[in-house]
Image 1 (cartoon, one colour):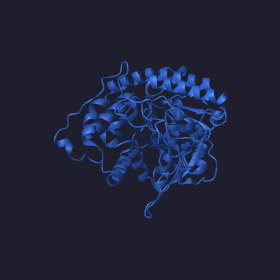
Image 2 (image 1 turned 180 degrees about the horizontal axis):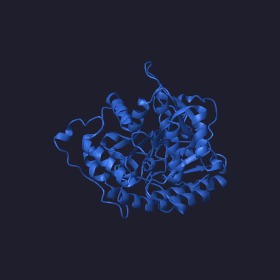
Image 3 (image 1 turned 90 degrees about the vertical axis):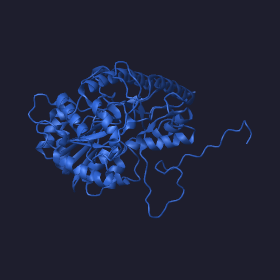
Image 4 (image 1 turned 180 degrees about the vertical axis):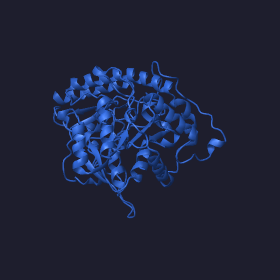
Length: 444
């Protein structure tokens, strides 16, 4: 090959769910699909993207990333950059987590959301896991023979999670962009009663749309769950990334605020250091709910994962104080509200339409239908953007379809793309300039 000859790049797979590099299948194993973010990162790697130890070490713009920037922000508490590990912390942690951390998390919820209420969380209402997917997997493994409602679109990792455990039946509930993804309490009642739902799983705020159920609306959801004996499983990993009217700051919010009795109300909450404290690499997350649920998910953890990292749990104890949570949230909202506006303005400028501006998360969910041919569906846009060293996530991955029961049907979100403003402001701005150039050339 001469120096001027461009490298031969491997073709994109015709099936986006193909496992990267797996030309053969061992008969004892099924083909396991990758989540949307893992798929797009794999395809970016085929074109030269590599994970770097430090941000800004390469020229790629990762608008596909599901994590926030992790460095210091103006007004944020000092970042933890080193750990002391004692001899005792080199042993296994309890499957349900260190008691000290469970107590600290219970105190955080009581101080932040349950002041003046008789019913309060204790350490026995908390279980610790080694990552968000682990927490959700434990819960899914502990569910019984029920109909489990889930929304479309929603978090890509729910798809395989809802398929691998066969006791419950996943029931999709479609949200409409024309209604700005609103779903009223009346709608909720109709779905629970009409479909016989025993539980509902949802990310709140929603990944990818940014829709946020909060305030009196969230209180009404919690009341209805108790009235109809339908367990509400709230994925609150983005609950500190919430924006007020016009994108300004808003208070921290959680369904825990509206629970009357922590043992009787069927509300289970998932959160962790991953997003809201901006420590994704620590893999420290938790489940909060009635003691009976915590016992069940801890039992599931005993055969699924065996428990999380003891040194990381120990280091997490001082981080979950209310003071640090509030300071970190204020810094997040100020920095990310600015990037939110930057992303919304930049995407609209190039012709991406947004059904509803995100009320939470650090994503913009946009339709590329109005862009020139070749860029007017999510997968084509994703592939074209990769050539500009910009990573995005096609909307079809959020069309959660356990077991591919809707096989053969086009995704309702095939023309949508999720754009992350998790990276730094500089990276977001650079990515938008490249996308603007891409669209301009396609028009020209």
